[in-house]
Amino acid sequence: MTEVSQGERWRGTARLTLAAVLVLVIVILFFVSLVELPGNEGYPLGLVAAATGIPGAAAILVFWFARRQETIDRRHGLYED
Image (tube, rainbow, N blue to C red; front, side, top):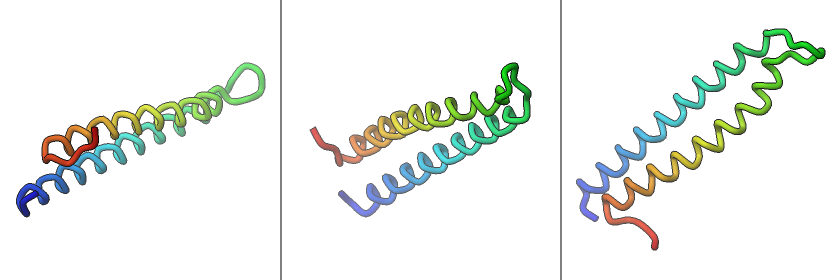
């Protein structure tokens, strides 16, 4: 892999990482804003939504990140079969 190709790959990886972190922060802020909403049975509805939604969103984000990173790696000739 050439120096230019390696630099392009790292820039793509850095952009992907930044995008993933920003999406995760937005998701967390969204669910934290729901925590204050009152529920019917005593537990705040937002707390239940946050407790189930944040791990689910994080799992989806991990799979999305891995797929996009695989695309970047294949584009630059670094991949596993």
